[in-house]
Image (cartoon, rainbow, N blue to C red; front, side, top):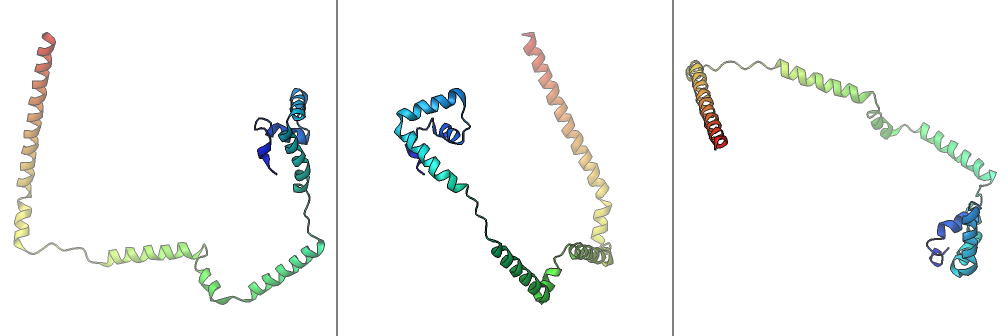
Length: 169
C-alpha cells in the first residue's frame, strides 16, 4: 500500500473514515476532500482492498494441532528418559545448592582466619624503644596542632580588624 499519494493532513482521517469512525463535520470534510483529490481517493481504495486481507483469520486445521500435540508428547517423553551429564551439571545451578555452597565458602574462610595464630609482638628491642617513644610523638603532634590553631586564630583576628576599619571608612 503506498501512502505517499495521500495528503499528509488526511491520512489518519482517511483510515478513520474507512472504519466508519469519522462522523459529523469531519466526515463531511473528508468526503468533500476525496471528491477533489485523486491521491486520497486512491489511498482510500487501497485501504478498502488491503485492510480486509490483514484481518483474515489464519486458523490452522485440527490435524495440525493433533500432530503438534503428539509431537510435543514424544519430545517431552524423550527428554525425561535421558538424564545425561548435562542435567547432572545443571543440578548444581538449581536454587538450593547456590546458597549452600556460599555458606560453605564463608565458613571455610572464617575458619581459616580464626585458626591462624595472632601475630606476636616482635622480640627486637628497637621496636620496644619506638613504642616507649610513642607518647613523646603524641605530645609533639598536640603541640603542632596548638600552633596551627593559634595561627588560624590570629588570621581571623586580623581579618576582623581589617573588616572593621573598612566599615569605618
